[in-house]
Image 1 (tube, rainbow, N blue to C red):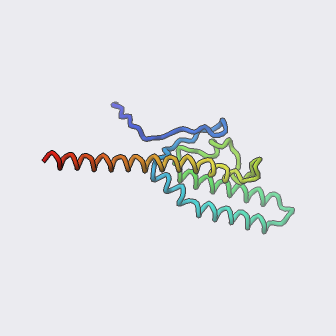
Image 2 (image 1 turned 135 degrees about the vertical axis):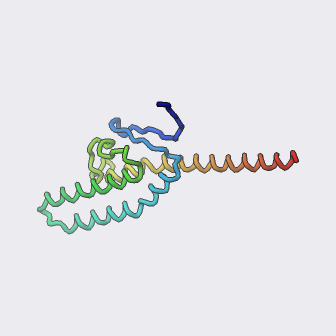
Length: 148
């Protein structure tokens, strides 16, 4: 079988020395999916907060079930954004996204804050490449008109 190798811009990020996250940060589709998911992420966070507040104080089992459900739903959303090859349970070493980091923020918030500048930088690279292509096309058009 013949091989066709193309540069898709996919980069690898080792997360906390454990799992590997693979994606193209300059892919406009990924950028769009990531930021379009923000309202859904916020809604899930509000839902978790409301459901947790409604639980009886002595019902730890329901609380753990709620956190596991939240984790599953957020990881499914992230898989939809970054692709099925990125298993966020494996990437994060099994850590629940509803868990709280040492900084007092939920793990999902820490993850999103870490990814945002990577995606913003990728979007800037994409826009710069598009601008460079437009300039090259305009230069070629001017050169073609000058040669006539």
